[in-house]
Length: 118
Image (cartoon, rainbow, N blue to C red; front, side, top):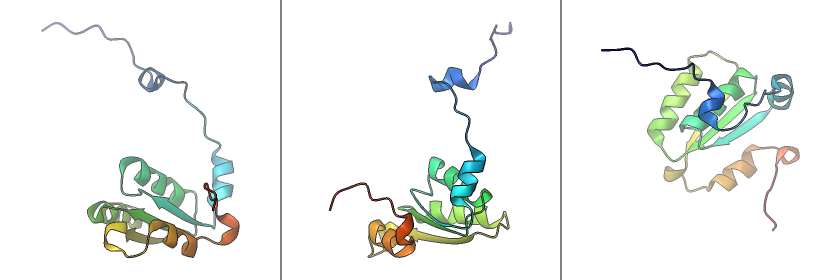
């Protein structure tokens, strides 16, 4: 079988947009020693955000998701890193509290960013 003539593929070819350099020092300053809430934390994007938040030194991470197996998986993955971040997980499906209620109780008022009018 003849080898296919393929050019090298760059990540930008797959994204259909230019890549963006992240300001890791700015992100670290924003997250370090703070309490962070990630909704959808058991999914592919959410679990990556959780891993980055832990790596950047958050004091506490509350992971909210609808899937108990996904929460278990990301919690186990993060605990295996032996990071100092305190981890908590909440499965919305099995909780009487809404995600909004948990957020309000978990995040200090000076770090809330409401996006809707009351």
